[in-house]
Image 1: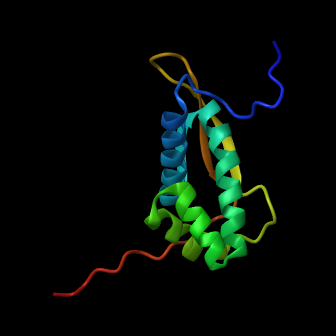
Image 2 (image 1 turned 180 degrees about the horizontal axis):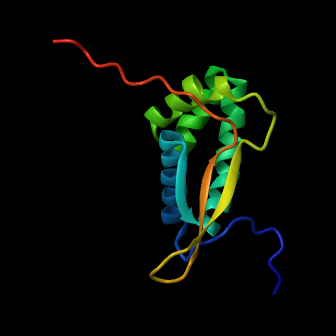
Image 3 (image 1 turned 135 degrees about the vertical axis):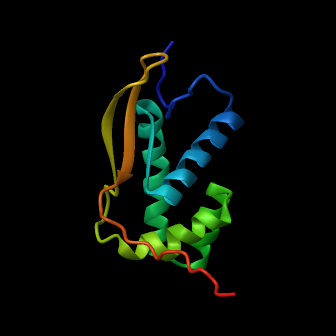
Length: 129
């Protein structure tokens, strides 16, 4: 039996659970700019996140709707289009994965995934009462 044509990791989960996991991790990456997870998960979400960042850099309503549909999170898509995409100046390779040791419980290899470019975000504005 061969495995030709099967892309991606299964993570021992069913399809809908795996999709929810990757969506959640990509949304967290967009919100916090850096997350620590297992190395396999980091490598897998890099594939999805870099494609979404490329769509956000191109801009346009159609691409915005595609990103919203893939992330299933309007707030994360807005952050990606309005704050992250304008600051990225490179054509590809937006994310970096650094090894972060081993997890204590099961000795799983951990990695930190973050943006290569230094991103500056506007601080949330507090309303005066």
